[in-house]
Length: 215
Image (cartoon, rainbow, N blue to C red; front, side, top):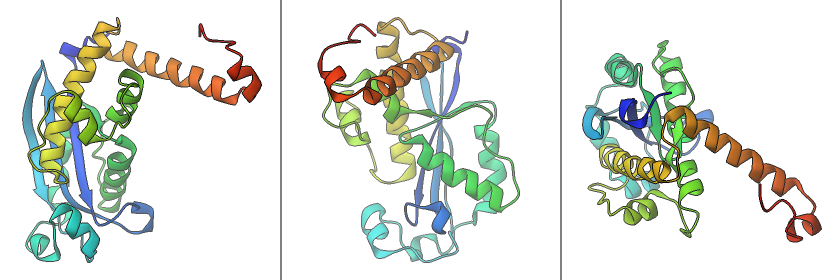
């Protein structure tokens, strides 16, 4: 059982040319922030030349333009340094499947094994379980809930730092519910997801009847 204070987390954020790595979108910026023993420290940050044009709508959102990344390293040039920071740590991101998917693609494309073992931890999923009262659980909403200021929104380092502080708040709330280790947290999330799936699968008349409320 690894208590939260004994865990080694790395909180990651990527900016990209679009939303689908499967359709050829690429990483334009990556940041990895270390969260250990309650302390947040910068681990790695770099712009990345995606070797493809950045659409104007993405530049409008992130401020990252073709000119911004013209002199930046390609992913293969930063892959090893990033992998060192990721190694032997629990990967965390806000909407983790997005960041994990893009980095999986980028590491595979340059022939590196860079992502840590184990499933990523998603702060969106955590927020859905722990902050169900919030109407939205995007980074802006959850950061506001915990009083976290985002220094540079839609930039990798600013978002990663904010997500690390959000993670700190979420873990504190989990402890208040009696979930005090990473292993227990994963089991708790899996159990809640299973119960929710079972309830959703029930016919409407059964769900509305109140049956299963004690689950």
